[in-house]
Length: 324
Length: 247
Image (cartoon, rainbow over all chains, first blue to last red; front, top):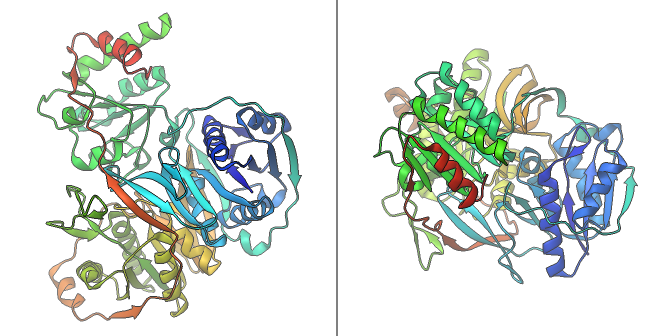
């Protein structure tokens, strides 16, 4: 019996989210009295794989080969299912990112497992197994009980901290046969957005709305995001107007985000927008309208004109960064 | 070509969320229901393809009691051709996906679509589960869909960019923001025609249910917003560092 963590790699490298996820898996495994194992798929060098032992993974399974060199939901599901059966996994963990969303539900069918996506904390109890997730696009939480023998969870980004927990680990390379039938959705090309931090993994998000008056004024938003190491986002009208890409739209009909810090500039805070962002740990609002509903939801607020406040904020952050 | 589009019946985006029965149940009092916005965008894209190719029949499927029929009729009014209601409460994603997979098997469909998630449970699960039940290829989070004969070219969002995927029918894909610009609104003719379009009701098949909601809760109130003078953003930076500890 074990807890199995799917650790995603980007061009052979792991990101912080994978270390958080193993730390989370280790905490669950201790409660259940089981070891935690990691699983990586694709071309990853051994020094990277060994990093996973720093957070408690006692065994690291590495599935590689031409047939898994590119992500395909059906073939990755197959690979993870095979390893899960091999190690008698009772809990299988994913990040709640695009890959987790593609694979965890398929795996649930394959293993006849109960699954809860977007979990925000450690289980509330282990027998029965109850976890917490946000529902109604962040307007509420639900405590969900999973009754199946195998349980599959996907963890919201920024929901758990990285915990160092170095163990002696072994890497086991697995050669897996993948039927051609599982390779039918063919990835043709990937267009990376260079120099931008994906919203799903950003610790800090700087977001702006119609208050910026036009796409030509986003320079200061990008600059503020850059010096904070933040991702950039926008409100629905901004993406509907085409000022920014749809990938930046956060809110009920865009993306649900979960950063440590969300800075909203020139966004009034309609209920649909707040729904997508109010599970942020800390929210800051800058708006020239003191009646803007966002002030009700935010932790810190500045009433003022964005074109006046943001440049000053940039200077203040620069001063802070050079002092720390 | 025939597509099966799974549509969910959800509270309107402006709904105030409340719970009853010891916080174990959603309070439906005064709630307006709508087609989940992602499903509506997918329906819009399918109608564009239908008009361009003159070769697409759109069947919508919803799992729910008779109370979901106005939502189904709205999808028909927007332009879907016919509909199936699986007569059962949508208890969890695995259960719903299994029902949709059964409807697929009992029809002659070329592909299955759904919105990436419903805006009530936001599980992001059903489309992928349907694919696995049917052993079909799946592509999640499609921000664009082009159909050329039986080959679909799908641009999907991934972490840090976009990926273009090609897949032949049959397949399953879920759509997100970007797949269509603005959702279509039904016109009077559509509403009149929708009344006559076929809506069949089928019983659910048995499927084990593994998850249930034990309790709902509301986010903790965070207290009043701390206001900082507009001429002193350095104070904000100090508070974010020393008090909130997020910098």
